[in-house]
Image 1: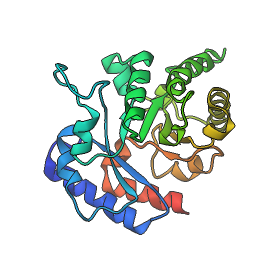
Image 2: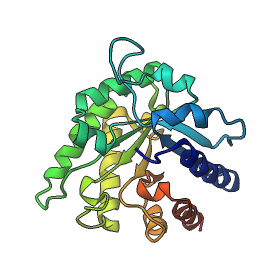
Image 3: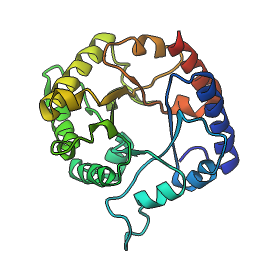
Image 4: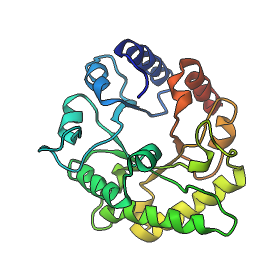
Length: 245
């Protein structure tokens, strides 16, 4: 639910336009609230590497599902990507692994690129978090097993315990590296090596201008899912500059 007005959304989107033009080697996927999609999607000066995304979709194209937003709706408004299963959708709205898998199937049917989020709630020393990650990834990859649409999938690893104002602590470089290896192994096991190579993996966990360069250098990290820092023009500009170094 940020920003609060169309004027603020346009101003922030202008920052992303400038960054996309200045750094053509990077893709900037900007996920915005549904009411702003048509406002930003109508721009005729958006660079090709700036991709407008919805924050959420539903599993049907139309029908009596009050409050839901369909893929045809977001596409008509100018979006050509979507988030699925963000940690806040999972934790605040009770979105299950099963529903996330259904949304993925719906996105595949529309050939819609998607960024699917997942991540453990706790990082316990006994390693139970590994089973949690494996379960989530099995549901995410299942719709891709019998087709060759893995290029539509971008994974966003969000360790809930390392996110936001109430984060217990930042993830360490070793933890991130080992988790990226784990994710790649699970995805490869599920989809096979050829399809798994098509899947990009992002990291999302309190990324800021101070830690972006170090996190970006971690093997296996293809990019970031940025939250609060992405709402501040100065922060997102500094993050991009840091990564570009």
